[in-house]
Image (cartoon, rainbow, N blue to C red; front, side):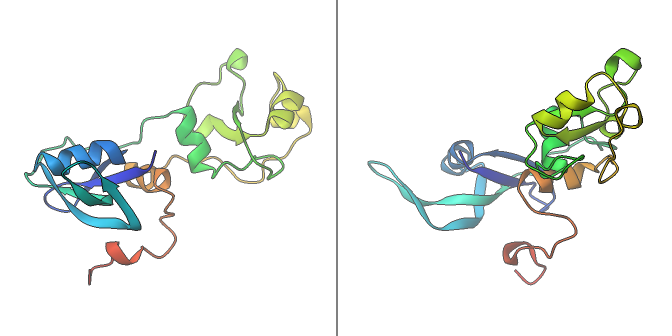
Amino acid sequence: MRETLVLNASFEPLSTVTSRRAVVLVMQEKAVVEHAHPGLRIRAASVEMPVPQVIRLSRYVRVPFRRWAPWSRRGVLVRDQHRCAYCGRRATTVDHVVPRSHGGGDTWLNTVASCAEDNHRKADRTPEQAGMRLLRRPFEPTPAEAMLSALGVSVREELPGWASPAA
């Protein structure tokens, strides 16, 4: 299922939803399509429309300010681009740098993406104890970085055409 970026009426990014939910919001006239996937269309008995990639809410929604992105296993894998922090291969699991049994918690700064082999090899030890080196240090993404990463857009990359100020 494709992800769709939801913008507030003021064009601030709010969240991502499935394309099915995005279509429902557009059909209920709660949102408008700002950008669609090129060449993809949804067809029904009486409706045909492009598959939305970005929608904007018709009414402004007040959102409390969020200082940090909530931690999740999926978020760690997305933050690390599904690359193992120890060897660089495809990561499928999340490893605690300081194991939970040693007081390490589920935090952005204590977890990294890891392949199953390295996670098993490191076991219940710190990287130093296991003789393993981290290729990159874990970091805490901002809420905006976490949302853009979930969409597959790096904050450090150039913004896509639909997100540029001239669009």
